[in-house]
Image (cartoon, rainbow, N blue to C red; front, side, top):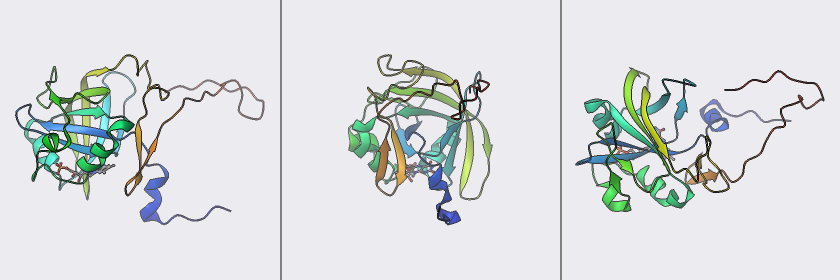
Length: 196
Ligand SMILES: Cc1cc2nc3c(=O)[nH]c(=O)nc-3n(C[C@H](O)[C@H](O)[C@H](O)COP(=O)(O)O)c2cc1C
């Protein structure tokens, strides 16, 4: 029998989206913050990504200034940097200097890309919805790029392992691709194909 999950823990049932590093500010004075509350909200053009950000974050102050940010996708090899960047505020330290990550200029926005990440989404914030502890930023992706050996329309987990936040200092890693045959519903009946 399944056990009831307290409502203040319920989010962990759906939490483990891919963890990202969001850069803000400018190439001259950049900041970086770890995010797990991110989701696409539009499937085609424009590509829109929703980020939930606490009012307390230094990154939020910077994002409000130029309404620009970059979503960078780190792999398992950046685990320690990802966790550290999610623990300390850029108000106090230069997180690029502390972690050794390299800011490089973006093509269309002021905040930098992180060289060590395998993919980048350059974004402009088009809407902000005020919530209680976190606001919802709707980010329009204006340019995207990824390592072609690691991303072939989708990440290849056999070559590139994304991080998925499980709470505390625990992360999951995506390790392999599995494929649904897509021809029956598990009881032998044919299904209509539905794709995102
Ligand atoms: C794995 C992980 C995921 C996080 N996800 C979010 C998030 O989705 N939204 C948020 O506001 N803070 C999130 N945080 C917390 C911020 O990354 C953290 O407060 C950071 O120090 C803010 O940096 P800043 O003050 O330099 O902007 C997360 C932290 C970790 C470790």
